[in-house]
Image (cartoon, rainbow, N blue to C red):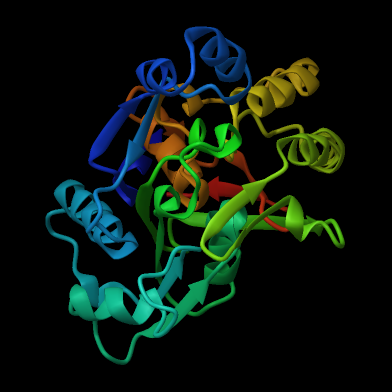
Length: 305
């Protein structure tokens, strides 16, 4: 028996589709494109227009969710969790603004998280510890916070958004795991509205701490047959698949198709996978986000009905 889990998600992308090959040939050379794309992966990136904000992407993702759930009653939402590193304003938080825009009940509980690539998994963990249902919103406009001539970032990140309706009647969080590396925040951070990333150190963090955590979880939970992980880069995807190859679990990927959408990358990955695949009831799924911090959060979740 299966559940149409895709209906729990809504997604959005920046309206400007960028062909990375054409962009590299224009800025640099075809030779440099071939050298870079082996590591980063995306054939296309998606940027927002000048006036499009994180909130706009969130609203678009919410509307996509409503298309799949035309009879959805927003009065059922008890908590709103908004995940972003690219707020429209320094304050108030986007949760307040989003709740106002879609006219949610003014007594709803609002939460804002700023945890980057682990954001969706962190939000699930938070939602699991709250009473009632939660709408988890993730949205980022990294294109507005990076140097377009910085090859480490400009060939990797896309603007994107997602919503996910979390209801404990349908989804059970079995266990959540978290680890952070001390004094490593400068390896991936934004200062003075300028994104900075040391790709080598991020890769090393995945190769050591993330892989170590994933192996430990999978060894102790042999019923896990699929992993949805943050889409960091093609090099990282290949590393994870290589290191976990002997465990024979399915590891979907869409980094080549849409790039790294930061906090919404796992919802986008779910949405893409579920277009052609079903997830059986009582299946246990491993999800894992990693990045900014440097940190990693992983959860085992079960679809229960």
